[in-house]
Length: 88
Image 1: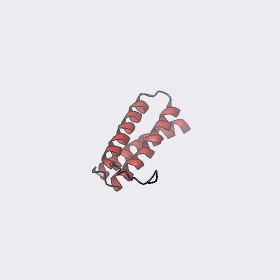
Image 2: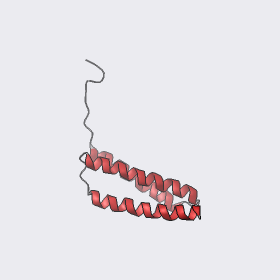
Image 3: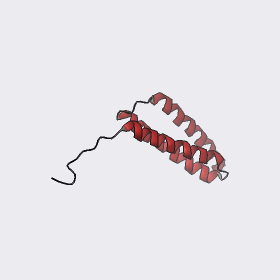
Image 4: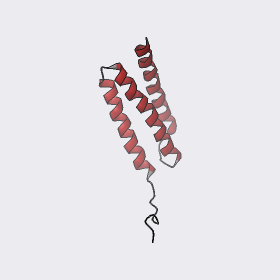
């Protein structure tokens, strides 16, 4: 009867794959970026997007969380290196 009466089921596997594809595109862009300020901004977005992947996994996406935590940690290390260059 109402507009919002139908509930749609979220496919967290599909959502995960879309988010991960976005992360990969941002990482490629960051790796090709010559301006370290822009590179820092891109890496900050990447690190945050990994948190969205973890939410998908927590909600049922069938992926290995430990693997993606290690990828996030790698991105965080790269981000810290870029931050130290920008601040030093």
